[in-house]
Length: 323
Image (cartoon, rainbow, N blue to C red; front, side, top):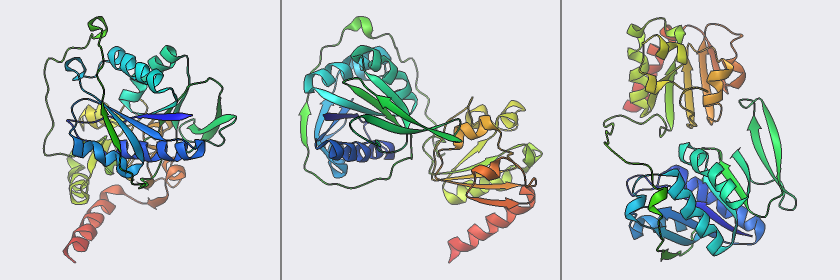
């Protein structure tokens, strides 16, 4: 069974999540005694495409078309489905991000393919094809059996390590026909945030909740995030009260993130919040309540007042940086 992995790019560049996908796809292909074909849609130069080969992409298909410069769910689904059929791929792997969540279900219908969303490990078995995923905000797990001929997997971000398996990839610039009737998305304006680490891209996130007590107390938290090269975040009550912008809200109804390190100050850890951060590699929690649910999800915890602990952490990081 051949494996196709869709590698999203941002302004012609791949991010860690794309290389993570190829690493995962490469290992799945090994289990199948097959090879990985990576698909890139949009203008990406050859040197950037070749980076996918570092993680095991033996074949790379590059699709460039004027109608595909902006993500359009219907048009992208049709292009990917056509390529799946053309190369006879039996497993399609995408990221469990906003793009994957938008395209994968459509692709499932188009290809009559079973789908496993948010998978976080390699398949448990190939025949039968069973995959593992976390459930109930990480409090349980599920084994999913996919019985269709074509199978779609969306991989939870930051759930698989980067594994270098260098190969010299073959790059094919594939021409596609686009039905303009499918292209419904029009880009009117682009406003890019500069000078700040995007929350969804950050490897380190420093977050605060109502335990911060006031918007005036956010200074040390922001300073710690800046010192660590990370992003700031908050719980929903904080954004609802206007202490922090809504774009920083993480949780089931906010942004779903998976950084390497998530630091939660004054956040109790309600189920809705943990649903958005439970995929973090490490969680550090600081709370005055020793029974706060956040401690059950955290690898490291400090029972104490965030307003007293934050300044000490800031000073400790500053000291380490001067060594």
